[in-house]
Image (cartoon, rainbow, N blue to C red; front, top):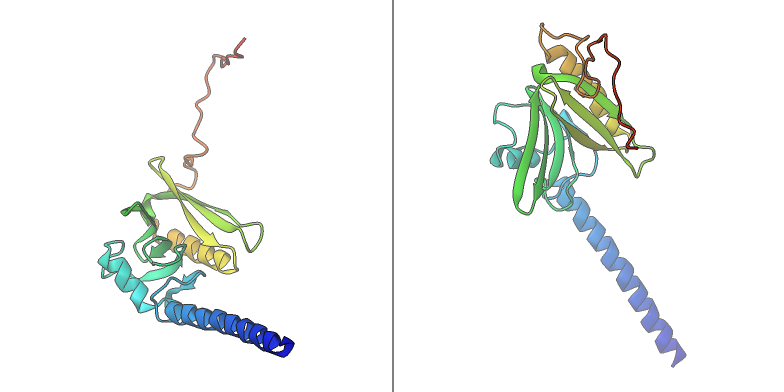
Length: 191
């Protein structure tokens, strides 16, 4: 009787382990074939063509754009959430309640880029794209080591493509220019 219980427990244990391994294999296969998004920042040569096709079908990128780097934050679909930059622009997109929102800026529209690295591998790094018109949006990239490469290539591309009329001394949206006045500023203390 005890022997039968031990055999039953072993079968359940190894069956459970087998299911986990099959599930992990299936997940890896789906990511490798481009059916599910990869959880790391991918450089141009590592991007699955299926990801590019999905982005083109959703009108996130044009057919003639070259994606230099991409990070997808979605779990089941490439279109859930992503951040990328191409030879023409920087793009962040997300799907919420079936609505796809796309935030984008061409390189000449960008005033500055700010990089805030994640504090650990579990935290995401944040790149803020500050535009000349005062708007801004963020790119989120996993802090698994690819975030710094993503940012460095983005900054290099922006500097090369931002245009000849770029003014480095121009204020960023976070630090607007303050005109000096002869009048002292007044501040309400609420009392």
